[in-house]
Length: 325
Ligand SMILES: NC(=O)c1ccc[n+]([C@@H]2O[C@H](COP(=O)([O-])OP(=O)(O)OC[C@H]3O[C@@H](n4cnc5c(N)ncnc54)[C@H](O)[C@@H]3O)[C@@H](O)[C@H]2O)c1
Image 1: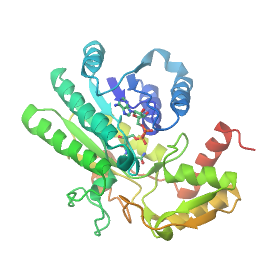
Image 2: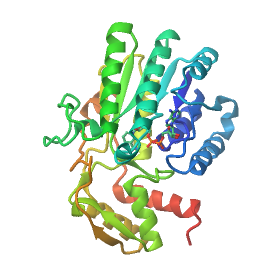
Image 3: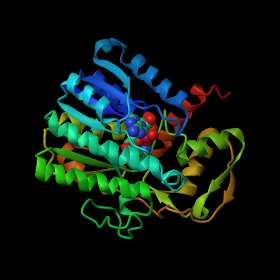
Image 4: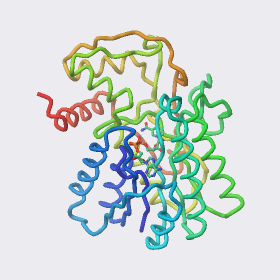
């Protein structure tokens, strides 16, 4: 298949590209390489994609483009003759949406709208796009199931992801575009995102710096290992042109308390964390916990990486990449 993958230099995008290319698909990757976090890490991920797919050299190309730039994106679609599109490009992060809300409208609303329009115009068979567990807000019913209420997002980030789901619904019903939304739950692992807790904790613990623990550690997250998640994304991309459901949770279905997560990093690194207990952060939610029954039924999704192993892989990558002794 010929696949357009947006956000290819991002954490999830880079891993997804490698899997798709090594499965024999042609991937055109685009990313605007913005400086929300170090562009050097994004560049290194692109080099890693090339390294891991060197046996399939002709199958990958990269173009630095912004999904909010309609004329530039139209050229990509026109030339690409894609079968499917996987849209992972977005302004991510809950906390940053209080600092720079406009960047969320730019990438997640205007950019996503362009993707939808171009998918219709160029008769894309299936659009797979990233949503987020944050759409569940502070729902108290767990595990979170796809049909639960998602009307109370706690941040503009979550509101843009919920908007994507609504926009995709309209394009499915009125424009006959086949769309599948994947709600990700705190993904971690090698090449992870520097703005997320797993990375920040690893870095600070290794450097002997204090870590901020929000809500005194009484928060839990359905930490999901990147390799498990990529298997799920690729199964949906390679699957039928129309999913049985418009939206799927893609998580680990096993929430872990922050304090236990930190303890696993301490055990793996052999270093003690200096914890600074903080209150609840604006926009944060108390727990995330995915029900993944639908994805299991329809795509045989079975995450099976124990936290201890996932953290060990992350530690190995982190110390190699940053040359930590
Ligand atoms: N990582 C998680 O735990 C998680 C959780 C929930 C949802 N998500 C969603 O999954 C997707 C991938 O997340 P990630 O963790 O890989 O994030 P990431 O920030 O590492 O990757 C996103 C990539 O998109 C690019 N990008 C941003 N705006 C763009 C634009 N306008 N045009 C082109 N490229 C643009 C960025 O440069 C970045 O490389 C995002 O949509 C994110 O919101 C991720």
